[in-house]
Image 1: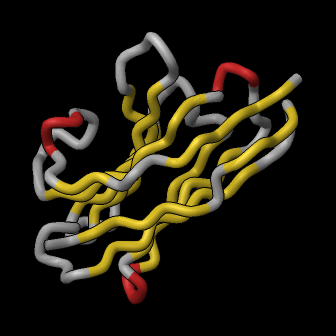
Image 2 (image 1 turned 180 degrees about the vertical axis):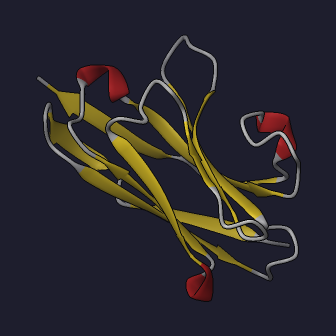
Image 3 (image 1 turned 135 degrees about the horizontal axis):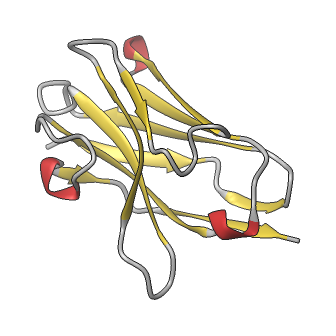
Amino acid sequence: QVQLVESGGGLAQAGGSLRLSCSASGGTSSTNNMAWFRQAPGKEREFVAATTRSTGRAYVADSVKDRFTVARENAKNTVYLEMNSLKVEDTAVYYCAAGVGIALQRPSSYRVWGQGTQVTVSS
């Protein structure tokens, strides 16, 4: 079974940057799509960004596309989320996910999820 390990979360000041990493182990058959979601207290889990190995495309949610970028290093089966110009509203638990579904922005498209990493942005 594929496992996802996240790193890079923590505390940042508003306007700062953080880089999240998610490394998949246990094979690549279920990791064609790798994505980032986030969930703040009292809110639903929302799509942040995703990449696909088969097409090489990257997608970033409209809410953060001017500040966040996503990249994939296939040799390591790792996906990165570069977060710049952080805002307090970016505070959330960020989850890495992997799957083979077509609808990249839907949580139900992903079979495997990481443990989540807390990102806290202070003013």
